[in-house]
Image 1 (cartoon, rainbow, N blue to C red):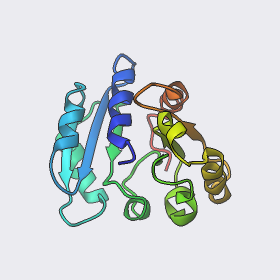
Image 2 (tube, rainbow, N blue to C red):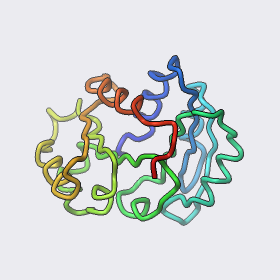
Image 3 (cartoon, rainbow, N blue to C red):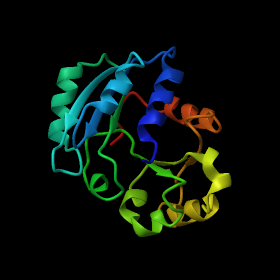
Image 4 (cartoon, rainbow, N blue to C red):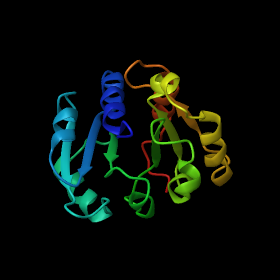
Length: 181
């Protein structure tokens, strides 16, 4: 419910005409609902269902990448199973980690789930179009996250309205085609 798939759909549509090919590895415990949403953008996608497991692992992602067979230089998104606990502890071979925190979840989440924010390369505060209806302090959420990760870039955006999206897209465009880890 953080808005990961909606953000990914919007991101893929915005980057579709760019210079880099795009591909997605979609993780969920059950169903291919999100993979079908991603496929509707025209981007290649492989679904991984984890069953009772709360996260993807590198072995699963490796097999999915073999199935995807993305071209050199592709920007590959891995949407992990959605929670702020399990996925933070597993390296999938990614070039960058992004933690998505919806304004509907509570501004104390970086304090409650520090591992997800300590290790991440960027934080997206999603669904900012809902801020007028919620008691969510964006500055407080960012302050908690930066106490754990001082140089953390944070993007306040709405995938629905497009507010704040350009800074996110610029950050993604700046990611290297080489895995820096």
